[in-house]
Image (cartoon, rainbow, N blue to C red; front, side):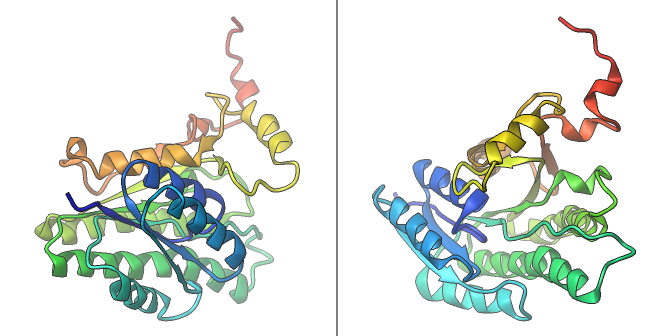
Length: 262
C-alpha cells in the first residue's frame, strides 16, 4: 500500500521539527519546509527522518514574501504526486504594543501568519482536488484567538483569530471535494528540540499557572493532526481544537481563583 504524504510548513526546526518526526514515526512520508534562516537545522531534521527509513524531501521558501505559497507548491508538485495531509505550521510570535506598532511589524505578522496560510491552504486544496484525493488540511493557530493575554499581542492574536475563521470558510468550500479542513490552537509549546536558553526554567515557572500544569509537546500536536486525518474524524471539518492545558479557561492568574488545596 502506498504511504501517505504529509507536507508541513515551518517544519525544519523547533515545533515543526517535532511534529514532522512524530508524523514520520506514525507512517507518513514527509515533505519538510523551512524559510532559509536555519538551513543546517532543517537538513539535520531531514537526515533524522531519512535515517528512519522514511522518504523525506526538503523545500525552502520565505513565506513572508508575496507569491511564496505558489512558488512553494510549484516545488512540491515537482517532487510529489500525492498529498494526503497538509499542515500549515509556518508562523511567528512578535510582540509590540498598538501604540508603538509600525507598518513593517504589522506586515511581517500579517504576511507570515495569515496571508501565507490562506494561499498555502488554497494551493493544498487545489492539488488534492486535481489528484482526486479526499485529503485533510490542518491549520496550526494559537489559543491567542480566544483570550487577550497581553496588550502586546494585538496583531499576532488578530492573525490567529483570522486563521480560525478562515478554517470554516476553507472547510465549507473544500467539502464539495471531500477535503476536510480543521484547526489546532495550541498554547505554550514544548518543541522537544532546539530549546532556547533557560527554556526549562521558563517552562516550569509558567506551567505552574496553567490548570493542567504542563506545556503542549509538539508530538501531541502531530498526534491530533493524525487523528483528524483518520477515519475516526471523517465527520469533523471546520472545527478548532484548543490544546493548551486549560490555559484559555482562565481570565486571571490561576492563584486568584482560590481553588481548594488537596
